[in-house]
Amino acid sequence: MKREQRYGIKSLAKDFPNDDVCLDFLFDAQHTRQCSCGGSYKRIAGRKQYQCSKCRFQIAPTAGTIFHKSDTPLTVWFAAILSFSSSKSGKSAKELERELEVTYKTAWRMLHLIRKALGQNNGKLKGIVEMDTGYLGGISNRTKGVMKNKTVVMAAKERGGNIRAQVVADSTAQAHREFLAEYVEPASFLMTDQTNRLEKAAKGYERHTVNHSKGEHVRGAVHVNNIEAFFAHVKRSVKGTHKIISRESQNSSTVHYSHQTQKEHVQ
Ligand SMILES: [Zn+2]
Image (cartoon, rainbow, N blue to C red; front, side):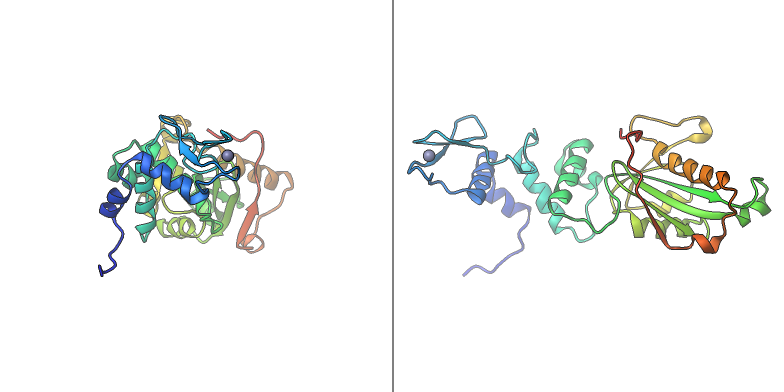
């Protein structure tokens, strides 16, 4: 008897040489070929559908799956799933783009849907995540001594999702790295300004930056408008109530701040 071997890309290509085979597999994984009317299902030539020979009922095996309405071949999808599940440390869209020779957009979309289908949700933010660091409290005077007295807050917001915010000791690269590891799913899109403290800290994320110092605030989907709105809101409410923020009173680890408003800039 043949010894069991690791199921790799070669086995996949052998088992699923083309989209017809993949589609048959999807059908058989969800349905039986025998219809309850006594007829049997057969593929409709040239379409991604199966029809009962007797009652003419039609079934599209991709309906309700992550493959639905995708122009990407099923063979590529299957390869993406294999690659994703055999990777120990998570897959990035960049890696998948190279491996499967698809566009970055396609790779990202597939990854997003595979993760979603597998219900990989450990409470971390994912997808497109904006991150920024704010300095609260103290006196609004930008001399170095006063900045030292300010409380450093790091916050990240998933577009269309929640915010995680935390008071941190300082805004070093190390603090950035720890914040990301705790709250943001690796390989997520990370939208930030151009702080060099994130250069190494954001390794493993797909970081995109806007250059505020050059007056750049939005470049397509790249912006940090939502997280800046969050900080503006926090700063306004601090000012409005004349509260002096003490580091201690804020140190209740995480603020699960739900900030899903219609004003959100989703794209
Ligand atoms: Zn039937």
